[in-house]
Length: 345
Image (cartoon, helix red, strand yellow):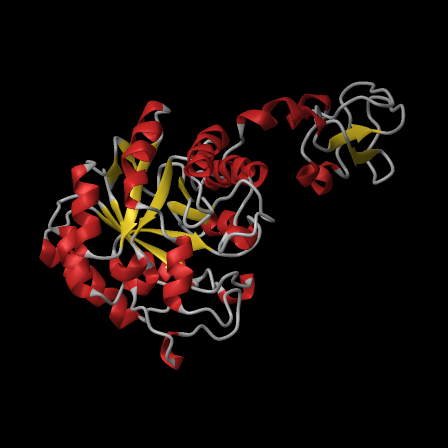
């Protein structure tokens, strides 16, 4: 798939998305700074979330709407989203600032009106959040834009993932990716079961990545070795900033490390190749080979005490040790001289 001119595929370096989420903490200046720092870190894109408390939930304090346990224990959904949402009036200046910095920006819409807003801003792609992966009408509406889509699959089983994919295709989406995800905040690395990624690639036949909610970069970087082409991580200026998502988000230095190390992991995968590598060429001479370990005269017979396998590698290969035993020297040889076939009768 392709987002804003950047090709995303298994044979390309990982596409890194910095998720701004609620880490603006109610200040557009913070949101602008996050975009700036994401650009400095080297990400490919920064992603917003487009909703209001009223478009994502109900203003209701009955038991079903109160969060139990975790980071947001005791809060109502409406209260949490009222704090966390990004005002819609911020979207245009944020999009403009990202484009000024030449960094791709797009968003996760949570209802049709959010899609309409983002279409007015010419968003180059859309992300479906894990919690919305079962909202098939929303997926179809997003797909009708014809833009590339990324669907996060936290909490979804294989059947639900396939239903989301089918809905995207039915809606008209031609470029589609899915992200392996665990919707825990934070999520333990042990929950990620990264061996699922190769199966997802085979089963669904799509560009596949990871939305990583663990606290460090190990899981994300490991996913590259298993075929992840996209990495999404929450990003903040300060993990101790006190916002709803700050505590499980990466800070600038960690995000820069993710960009660097995930690229290194991808480069290290390379291709199947048993040949000698460029960086090895100069060291071949330091491999082991057979050397004479005493002065010998022409006519002497080679015994086990005559030769040894040592470094460097200018003599015959150690695999010829047995073949040389019992051979007769044609010329005199010196201690420390490499063996060669022309020295023997």
